[in-house]
Length: 97
Image (tube, rainbow, N blue to C red; front, side):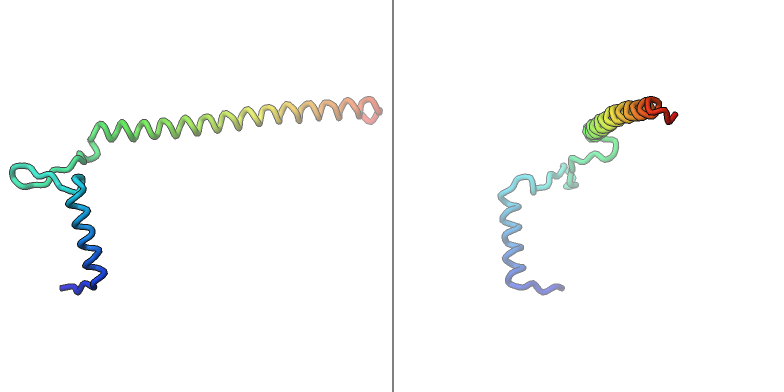
């Protein structure tokens, strides 16, 4: 047996009042009195579709991020290659190479 304080009693009463006002708090029972839930488990097709759409969206975002990084790296690589060619040309013109 637990002892409840006045504050606990008020919170409990508020929760019960909220449950009575909110229809989503009322459990649905079948004819035998067993509670029926909307959760159909891991084989629920709607849940699988939502999960796959979420994964697809995240994978597309990741692919776009990788694509942007590749484009940046390629432009940086071209810039560095151009700088190296310019330095080699400068050394050749000076007669160092």
